[in-house]
Length: 211
Image 1 (cartoon, helix red, strand yellow):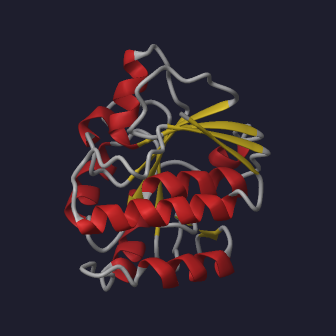
Image 2 (image 1 turned 135 degrees about the horizontal axis):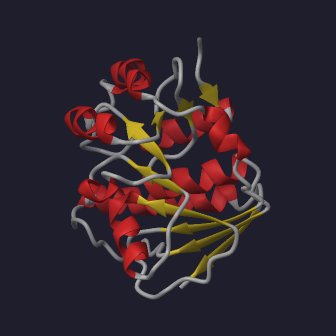
Image 3 (image 1 turned 180 degrees about the vertical axis):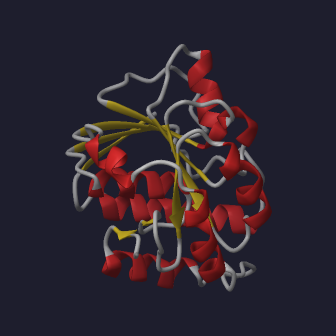
C-alpha cells in the first residue's frame, strides 16, 4: 500500500531546491521512508477529519502568547513546551524530534513525526514513545505515511495545513533571520528556504505571518 502524496509536482520542485544545500546528505531518505510506517499507530483519516479551515501554527521562535484561531499546530517539542507554559494545548505537532523531543512524551494529540536520512536514531528512539503518530517522509511514501512538499518542520506544517483544507493559516514565531537552535551556514540556508516555501504556500491560500 502506498502512502499519501499531497502534491507530487510541488514535492519534486521543493526537493530539487533543498537537495542543493551544500553539506547535507540525502542518500538515506529512501530507507527512512520505508522504515517509518512501522511506527504508525494513528490513521491518516484522523488528520483529515480535523477542521483545518482556519489553522494557527506556532514555531519555536515565538515570544508572546498568540491569538489562536481554529486548529492549533505546534512545530517541534520546543513550541509545545512554550504553549503549555501559556496554558494552550495544540491538537497537532509537526516534528523531526530534534528540538526538545522529550516534551512530546505523553502528548495526547496527533504527532506528525518526520523521518529522513539524517535522523534515523532520533526517529527510532522517539517514534515508539508517541501515543498517536503518523510518519511524514521526504521520499516516495509507503503504507501509513505522508509525503508533503517542503523541507523544514515549519514550512512542512504550512504546506500540510494548506493541502488539508486551510483557508486561512496564521503563523507565529517564524523569524528566518533569528537562529535559535544552532547558528551555522546550513541552518541559515534552511531558514531562507523555509521563507521561500512558505511564500509558495501563500499562492495557494491565505497565509498570515504574525510577529
